[in-house]
Amino acid sequence: MDYSPYFNPPIETMSREEIRSLQSASLRRVVRHCMNSEFYRKKFSELGITPDDIKSVDDLRKLPFTSKEDLRENYPFGLSCVPLKDCVRLHSSSGTTGNPTVVLHTQKDLDDWAEAVARCLWMVGSRPEDVFQNSAGYGMFTAGLGFQYGAEKVGMLTVPAAAGNTTRQIKFIKDFGTTVLHAIPSYASRIYEVMKAEGVDPVRDTKLRVLCIGAEPHSEQQRKRIEEDLGVKAYNSYGISEMMGPGVAFECQCQNGLHIWEDYFIVEIINPDTLEPVPEGELGELVITTLKREAMPLLRYRTRDLTRIIPGECPCGRHHLRLSRLQGRSDDMIILKGVNIFPIQVEKILLGFEELGTDFLITLENKESNDTMTVEVELKGLFTDDYRKLQALQKEITRRLKDEILVTPEVRIVPKGTLAASDEKKAVRVRDLRKNY
Ligand code: COA
Ligand code: ZN
Image (spheres, rainbow, N blue to C red):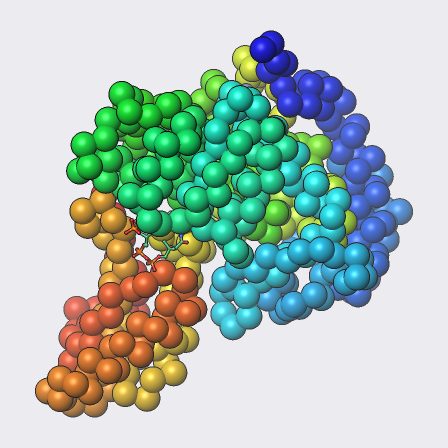
């Protein structure tokens, strides 16, 4: 069947001028809507501004920044701009300390989110005839339901396989004729390794042709290897749960930067130290203002993700700005198995054990195509050789850490002085030895 190359042709092919004037109108509306929350009323009055001061995108810099800390401090519903009875879902992710962050959605927010993901999936060539399989975690992970509703909106047959169970995952790919797969890059490599071990040739034995990879930084070299291994085209996906999740920005078939949907978002790239905009095309922190969100609009949200805007036109006909692949973070967040983790979460759990000292070391490795985290922690007092006691302690630390960070670390209890000795200044908390990055 002949389809348009665009899921939403009028919006996706808008000129820069049209995008800008749509953004200005949306910004005026969203700023007025923000006044429904005490949080924004306070921020505006501190800056001495009112919604009338915001007439166009040119006035964006008058607005306050928002951050993960704002979400955490106003946990759970303090940033809501609609009554709770109008919200139909929330997603929550790890916070830097203490409380997690919560993002609320109205039904319209969810519909808009599904359309954003549908545009992305369509952009990389997915069509209703395709079979889409999602290996992301469901539940609170936004890539689960986020991709699910977007793929359904495209009209694909969807396989909500969820994370793990790689052998079953491969059976689904073969038996259901999966053509489009979503997997984070390290897990795509893991699927390939298990296929090899099971004698499955992805080109001969499967219909896979498109892979959506995101949620984890990866190099161009890693993308190429995954494409060769699995015999697919792999497209980079950028999502952030504070914005909604996947669907924020995605590569088109040109594979040169991720288009960010500018009818949903206004983008700024700032210097994280001075908070001033960087010169066009230079690397800085991505700051996003939501234009459509009802339940929880976010003004000038500091994502902490480092990227730059790719200048120039894209041959695909979309004029929505392109972000270069994400180049790291302006904070100390770790991404492991597609899960965001802050070292301070580990510290908080370890401090809860009176047997433990304050020094610990997190080591991230790639072992036999599996990403792993080892947490070494010192005992406070003399090392005990009571094996049963140590084993029980180790088991309890592992359980509580898994509860907090959602992945299972390997915990090693070491004698006092083992970790701090090598570094007299501030102890190094994280060693990332993964080869992929
Ligand atoms: N996506 C899918 N499966 C993954 C994965 C990922 N990112 N990371 C690891 N897995 C697989 C493992 O290979 C393993 O497979 P197996 O059943 O074939 O052995 C299985 O999940 C369990 O992994 P393990 O490392 O033993 O467990 P864990 O307790 O440390 O991790 C996960 C738990 C994998 C379930 C958790 O990390 C997860 O849900 N990750 C996905 C997060 C996600 O979807 N992020 C997208 C952005 S919102
Ligand atoms: Zn393009």
